[in-house]
Amino acid sequence: MKKIEEYVRSIPDFPEPGIIFRDVTSILQDADGLHLAIDLIQEKLKDTDVDVIVGTESRGFIFGVPVAYNLHKPFVPIRKKGKLPCDTIEASYDLEYGSATVEMHRDSIKPGQKVAIIDDLIATGGTVAACAGMIEELGGEVVKIVFLMELAGLNGREKLAGYDVESVIRYEGK
Image 1 (tube, rainbow, N blue to C red):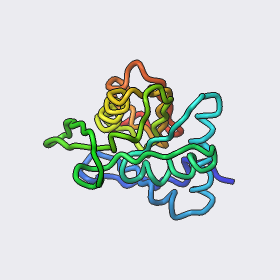
Image 2 (image 1 turned 30 degrees about the vertical axis):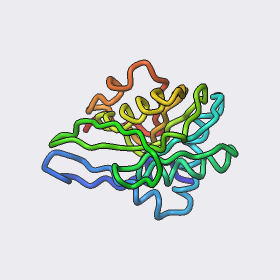
Image 3 (image 1 turned 90 degrees about the horizontal axis):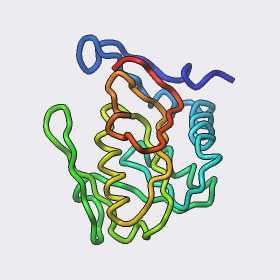
Image 4 (image 1 turned 60 degrees about the horizontal axis):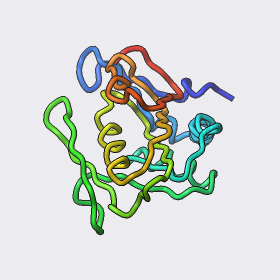
């Protein structure tokens, strides 16, 4: 079987010159790559006591749901603003050009629950920092954050200082 890095398609100069885009769809489109990605993400949780798996829209859903299923844990989606039907809490964060807002149902995390956040990529860390803040606002404890890929050159871990953060693949650049 190939290493997980071999399933990632790297596209130079996208979305702008000098950037290498790391394409997760090439992992998803290969049955062995998808299986390996889920196994490797789940492996990062093997020694973690967790009650709930949280995933961010949308690729955090792709990787988080199978892990939750395998571990027999509930899954909580964090969505873009306006997509959830019940009472929600929200958090906004800055993007390179502008800002974004994410939401989760107010009743999705119970006080004292241990939560693992799963997402496909850490770049600047803003999305997951906003998610962690909402989880804590509801009384949950973020015990682990796992990413499939990390763009270390964008320093996203700095926004997540104080959390147990792991990535399956680490790219030194942006």
